[in-house]
Amino acid sequence: MYAQYDGLIFDMDGTILDTEPTHRKAWTEVLGRYGMRFDLQSMVALNGSPTWRIAEAVIELNQADLDPHQLAREKTDAVKAMLLDTVRPLPLIDVVKEWHGRRPMSVGTGSESAIAEALLSHLGLRHYFSAVVAADHVKNHKPAPDTFLLCAELMGVPAAKCVVFEDADFGLQAARDAGMDAVDVRLL
Image (cartoon, rainbow, N blue to C red):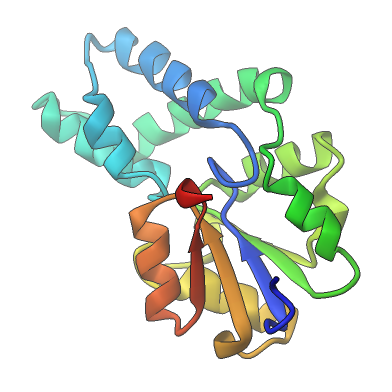
């Protein structure tokens, strides 16, 4: 089905790993310390964004005076404390296993590299991917194409010969802007 592509790129959160409930729990815990709340619909709309950008939106929503980078670090620490015990692969991991060794594959995620690497390693999935490009590897995050362009570069595959698997509008836009085809996994 994907034989026409020379490289496969997968978003991580919500695409190959079921991390969303854990991320929401971590946000609830961290924001509760400050008496803040978040709007679930707004949070879902920011899927694929780096944590500091989500923190910025939450701070603005709550009209708080906090450093978004500090709040993002607190949330990342909370996620690290609970992720390894709660996250499971999603069904799309079967595509990864099917194409392993047949095409280069990479992960392009809005998560920080420490979290992405820890999760993929803990679940025994890291060896499937020749590269993991995370939020701290690029200056311009999704919906900018930088994450996926770096994935293609690290795999040694032209962007036009890659397909991206995504579950978020920001990521689908990033794939299109990178000149790649995209599969919206929400429709599978």
